[in-house]
Length: 320
View 1: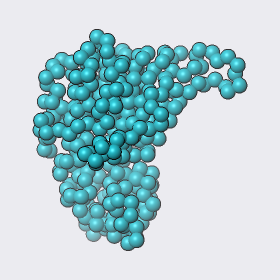
View 2 (view 1 turned 60 degrees about the vertical axis):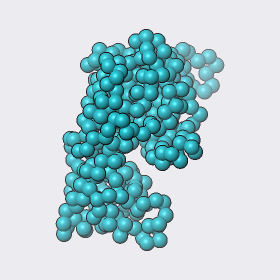
View 3 (view 1 turned 45 degrees about the vertical axis):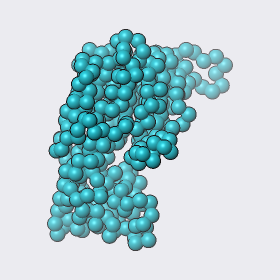
View 4 (view 1 turned 90 degrees about the vertical axis):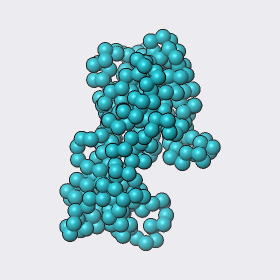
């Protein structure tokens, strides 16, 4: 797999706003933040520059990303610890490193530019490439999914993870096409998907394969399962005044983040209780009003930021 040069890296999505949200928790000596999706290291480098007293723990399941980020972050020396892990392994990673509490968490969900731009990874429906779609190097590939799942199972995945309204038609078309020849590359899959969608619908809502490819990627990488595991672990690991910021790129991710933050920032006391006991008070407060979006100027220079939705929260008291 090709590696991106660390000197030719884009500006991370909503970088300045993320620094504004997380930096107040990272001013004290010994402060630690976790970048759950290290990627090319752009957000981490920006936070380390803004918070010279802080150090970072960067997680990524992709060894290519870890290597590229290592080159970019080399000037920060021992202020950075890189760990190959999926972000729902956060609790185990912190235990292994002997870090009981942290002051910041960042998760930039979805694909990194390294993964999108690598033609041999199979994430892009606009180029013909092997049907891989794994963010790491383990587990089944997208080819395994489309060549072995039964039509009802495929349809369920496309509907749930891709919100694809033609899920049944696409699933049946995939199963029929693979009987003559298994799918190995993205181009043939794209053709099959497009042919299964009614002609009138092919030119609305973006590329006809966009939702199917999203669904396959989420299935292959267990993305929503990992997010469901990471969110409570990250909230639990934060010290008082610690902050968390999450960038989501589609409604399924954002819905999980919204629900998790809402539960943590809402009192568990009955509404008619005249005096709320301390143990029933919320442990977090929201730092963003709803989901914040990138500016028009940012999306103009970086179209990949267009779907980003940022939410953040701060721990205001210990859990009981």
